Length: 630
Image (tube, rainbow, N blue to C red; front, side):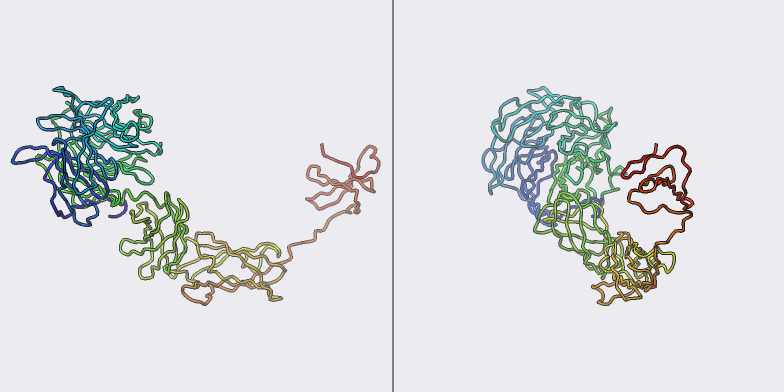
C-alpha cells in the first residue's frame, strides 16, 4: 500500500482451519501463529475448546492452517485466557473461563518444537492471582504481567485492577509476586487491552498501556500507563490525557515498535456508553495512535481515511497477533451475535515500517542518466549482506544496492531513469529483506543540465567597474535543464570546465568552482596583472559526451586596473626619523619625537599636514618614549 496507508487482506484459506470461535488466543512462535482455546459451537451448544492450530506465516498469498497433534494431559477447555511466547519453541497460558463458568488460575506451557506437541502444567508459588478471565497478560523482560480481569475464588465474582507478575526465568522462575504500584490506578475492569509501548518523552522506558474495558455498569475509554521499570502508574506527558476514540471493550489493541515512535493499532470491539451497559454496538473500525504525538490518525469513525481494502465485519473478542517480518496484524474469528472463523491480515508496513528509518538524501536531485553519488541519512542502520534502495514514482521502480557506512548513513548511486519521465520519486531502504522504510523521502530526477541554456553573471565578467587586480574576482552560473528550468540543487561541480587567460601573455589563471547546492555555482579567480582577461565556461558530462560544451555567452572579456592610487597631500610631511612616534587623538594622527622637537598633525579628512602652535616648554628631544591620549 502507499506510504501512510494500511490495507486489509482476506487470504485464501487452505488446510484444516479452526472452527469459528471467540475469546481464543493467537500467538506467534517462530514462523507459526498458534491458536489455542476459545468458545464456539458444537452441535448447537456453546462449547469451550482446548485444541491447537497453527498458521504458516511464510505460506505466501494463501493461509495454510493445520490442526496440531498434542500428546499427554492438556489444559481444560477454556476461553478468555491469555497466552504468550515464552521462548522460540514454547507457548505459555494463564487463567480463563471453562465449563459452567469455572475460572482458572493455572499456568501451562506447550512445547511446539516436535511434531507431537506436549503440554506441561507448571507448578507456581508465591502470591498466586485468584482465578479469573477477561484479564490481560503481557510478557516483558522475562516476566508475565497480569492486569485486571473478572473472577474470584469459589462463587465470588468481582472486577479487578490488581497487578501480578510471574517470573519466567532465573532463580525465581515460576514465582508469582503482587506489586502495589504507586500512583492513581485504573478502575477495576475486564475486557480491556494492555499493550507494551514506549513514549517519545521517555524512549528508554517501557510501559503497559491499559485502554478501555468494562465493569458491571459501564464501558471505559480511558488510557493508563504502568511504568514497568519503576512499577508506578504514570501520567501521560500532556495536559489532557489521551483517550480511546470510543468507550469500548473486547477490542484488539497492539503496540508496534516503529522508527522513531511506537504505533498503537486499535480494531473492533463493543462500543458503548460511559453511563450504561445497555447502549452498545459491535464495530469494525480501525485506528492508530502515534505515541510520539499521542494523536489518533483516523479522521473518520471507521478508519477508512488511512485504511483501504475490504474491512472485516463488525465483531468483538477476536484473536490477534503481529507478524513482525511481514509487517501485518493477523485477526482471526470473534463474535457478533454469531461465532466467526474468518482470517484477515492488516498490512501496516507503510505505516510502521522496519526497525530502521531513512530521513534525508544529500544531494536531493540528480540527472536522468543516474550514477549520482547519494548519502542517505537515517537511524538504526546496521551492516547487512543485502541493502537495497528503491526509487519509485508509483508507476515505475528501480532498485540499486547500497553500502553501509555507519548506524546513521548509507551510500548509493542513483539508478538510470532515462526510460521514465523526469520528476520526483520516493526513496525507500530495505535491509536484509525486513521491509521498506515508510518515511517520505524524495529524490528529484531532472533533465540533464543544458549548457546552452545556462547563464553566467557577476563582476568577475565585467569589462569595467571591476575591483583591481590582485583581488578575488567572482561570478555565478545558474544551471538550467533542457527545458530552460532553473536547477535547484548542486552536485555537478566536477562537470564545469572554467578557463581564465591573461590576454597580454596567454598565461592561464586558476579558477575554482564552489557548489552552492541550490543549482548555482560560484566561480572564483584572482587576476595577477592589470589588463584584459578572457573568461570561458564549459560543461562536460562524461555520461553523455566526451566533448566540452560552452554555456550561453561564453567567452567574456574582463578588465582589471591597478587598485593603488597616489594621494595628493597639502602641507609638508615630517622627515623620516626612526625616533618618530605616531598616535591618534580624536580623528587626527599626531607625530612627535626623534631628531625634531616639533609636533606634527595629519588630518585624514582633508589630507593635510599641519604644525599646530603649542604653548609651554617642550620636553627635551628623545626617542623610544611612550605617548597616549587622555
